Image (cartoon, rainbow, N blue to C red; front, side, top):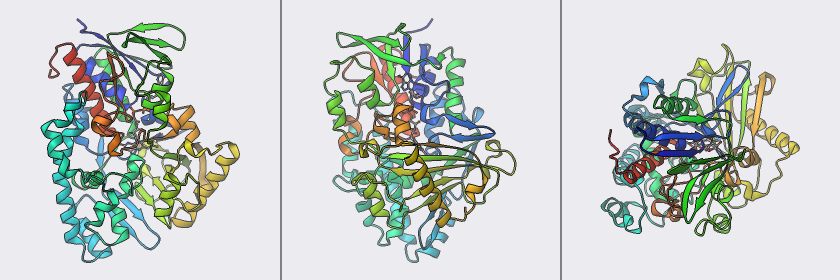
Length: 499
Ligand SMILES: Cc1cc2nc3c(=O)[nH]c(=O)nc-3n(C[C@H](O)[C@H](O)[C@H](O)COP(=O)(O)OP(=O)(O)OC[C@H]3O[C@@H](n4cnc5c(N)ncnc54)[C@H](O)[C@@H]3O)c2cc1C
């Protein structure tokens, strides 16, 4: 017999991970998703014979996904085909390129070749970050419902390792003098949509995680994770209602009671989980006057990530470049300042190009390729008018940058299908507040106890999952948000989480 009824708003990675965990524990789970496809920013994007990931392409910390599957008594490999990438990625500067490998010998050879004399320092950096991750990981896997959760032994042990008051770039300065080497271990701040000069130093764990555990491609794209999770929700008796937008959360006397759909029908539930973008949901899905801590005015004062300009190109030609390529701006620091401080679009941009067809023949016809291009830019706070002309102009600048800086000289002649996504599209079509694709920033004032909590403090029986909530905005932390909320709901029903 079902233990309790749970409705989930949104079938993104957060909603799906909590959905599969709760359905496999006997809860009656109903997920309501506004789009006709599963996955949210992790949905597949199909154009003709070409397949793309909409958002995430770097898959790290596979052990967390493995655990989520194991928590439903399943093996991730029974649903997904993983390929470990070596090199993990190629970093291209004006004067040199670095092939970054998680194989220590290969990495050391690359460091000796490009940055002689730095081998020991790299080893020292990675071993120190290993210790930091050991302390930080348990803090990213727990709930912070009460203020004294901050005094838990895990958090107290973490404090000396938080590098308080120091940015990622400062921390790397303790190890490396060479600017490019520092960038090779700090550009990862962009995964959080942050500047390395502002991102907390504790995130030096990210390069360690890459080097220690590697990064993976999944056959068919990372969107297949969401598809697999949706399958498990249904195998466990849960229901997914696609093309069913939610209009609001129904609440009374500070308690969530269910949801109202756009068509006016109401669905009652014991627990409501919100997976839609946190800041969007606070502003759009709550009755006016319900919120104090997260009122629209207070949300507007929070710090948000940058946005991205995306181009997805289906091409009738194969290209040899690596799976993941990061092309740095000539003046990277100014480029970063233009994104985060000056809120300006400039021609000297950094570009990420994914060429997954070299490892995955399912994404494009033989002899063709499906290129994914991402340019970090300011979010909608910049006030850019993303009309047709602006899109055309910026697209041309992005393609010109790629032509000038890479071996991809003839892209325009081979485009069969294409699509652009701008900050405005993220905001209006994907319901992402300010088009800030990586959600709330990860400043320490917006982390752990200070990040929107999984047990939502403003409404009883309401839970938060997804990138804008604890613990953070990448896929592994989003899956953890699903686990934390599921554990909290089990405990409310006095049911052990373990099955
Ligand atoms: C371009 C890009 C690149 C990224 N790259 C990486 C990467 O390489 N690695 C990584 O780990 N992470 C990456 N991320 C970050 C993160 O992993 C993804 O954004 C992830 O999809 C966020 O998951 P989520 O569950 O928080 O929200 P979402 O994926 O946004 O899911 C929320 C869901 O709620 C639905 N919804 C919204 N409003 C309503 C409503 N009113 N009614 C019903 N449904 C609604 C949406 O349609 C969506 O399906 C990237 C993100 C982007 C955008």
